Image 1 (cartoon, rainbow, N blue to C red):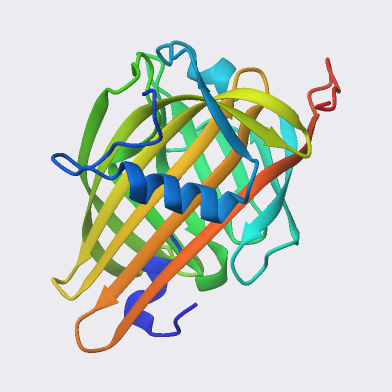
Image 2: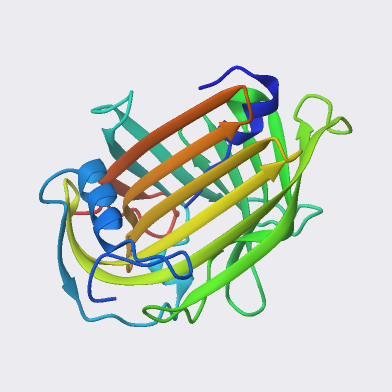
Amino acid sequence: MPKLCLLSIMVGMVFSSGSLHGATEGEDTSLLAASEVLRVLGEGVVGDPAPGRPLSDPIGTARWEPGEWWYRLTFGARKGKTELESLAPIALTPRGETWKRTVGKEYTLYVRQTAEGDLVMPTEIAHGHGLLVQFDPPLSYLVVGLAPGERRMFDGKMEVYSVEVPALKRYSGRIRATTMHAGVYRVRTPAGTFDATLIRTDYRIDIFAVVTVRDRLYTFYADGVGKVAEAEHRRISAIGMFHSDTLIGKVLVSFTSTSPATRVEAP
């Protein structure tokens, strides 16, 4: 992780058809996409495509209920280690958030559901850098009704504050995202084998016309289980100062519901 103050917000971001392809308008990335995903997740994880269907129920697909998901990291500096992601309801916040998703010890995502059924993220905390990020409008998390091959565009602002001194604004910037339903695939993980919907999102973040982040995220969701695998390709450039190119991957090891009514572990 770079230690340049200007770049600290960049490394604090968490970004989550019949063949493995698609995203940027006019870009034929079938080979690149397959190469990225298969290289990051490892041999045998992503299998044959299955019949695609629209994302009609983000809550059910993401298993949006109190729970704990353990993942094994498949690529990067922490390859082979495990990481916990947890989800819990919270009291209504001033920005309308009603859920908190914690990703390891690094990030906390604050999420709410819209009247249309989308899941959106108004706020994120990057604990390692002591930064609180607010998105306006809230950043799309899962989009209801997204059909195979369909794209949705997002263009918004981001304001970055100090966690310790919330009134202290560190940076402002713009974030653009293209989210695509990239089909359904058979995904094999230590927790089991699933027919999982692949959501691909390409992010571009610009700050001060100096720092640019391009982040490509492939997330596989299995109905009733949630996220079962994820691959990320993150590139950060700061003119005359810094450049990085990072690949990260994870696969599901186990899931445990922490809802009082049901405590069920994934097979």
